[in-house]
Image 1: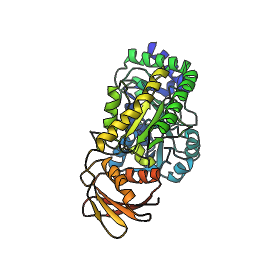
Image 2: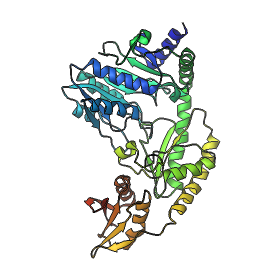
Image 3: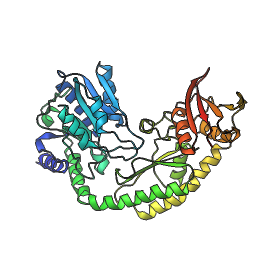
Image 4: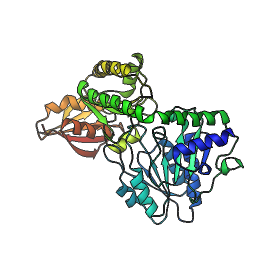
Length: 418
């Protein structure tokens, strides 16, 4: 009885039938089961899968598994604010397309995707659309004629270890792996009843206050977007300024190491995240920021939970400029890279072996030594430079010419315009 009541409450919040919804062990499990089951159910149609370039890693990992098994995957590009277009999905559709996936909103920059328009394109082609609604479901149902939906309870403040998967009636679906009689054969194993009940109750509770809280948090994140841009030099606020989730704001700071900035903010009492290109674990750019073509170094993602206090936001805005300045001062301590003349109007900056943001810092130090119209070649073997040097050029009004082969690493060519 408790399980049935929780299912009905969750289905009401999603906007689907109760017998279309099953509970899973996590949001990731819901995504993996949904992708695998939908692809298997439509295997006779073909093995082509469409995803956006900024999907959550759970979707991208499922796509990688499908590709490794012989399937085909198309990745739809996004614009500079992180949004796809319906035209992009239409262009990716093929006669053998079995499934398309699209997040309802991006987890790193908060950009809301045009799910309704993409669903219309997919429906017209007879292709089911799976929506990853983890980030947005707590704020409201997902509009559009989608076919499958996945979400995670902890994203709306519920307990960890509970996800949900919705498969609309009429969608061909074949659950993969060993199955049993539970959850319509789509989620094997005994259900965690207490956690499921808590997940449904928390979803109903946050939805009751969603409209009012969304307006309040949107005002706070708008304040952060405006104040950060004015108080911190050389900062890029990323994501769509209008079509975005209420509580997420993301920005990137030139000449700043993201992890170092997070540590400074943590000491001041603020727990924020980073999609930085220079995390200590990967040393690779965030795939979302890379797909958007925006600055990745010094990236900070602020996620305001429901109930976030205005006083905390104000204190964060007071602390941030000093924290950024302190990190920049520390990173400016190393001696400038060797600068070698490479012609009458060119310089070569050797940043080999150095990680971001050092190559960009050293580029900034020498650009003033180049005559207008002259070029700088930055030698770097850091993958993040491929993203951050063009982003620096756009922010500073310089021309990014492109890449050239080098004996080691890559030569990134920049022309001084002013």
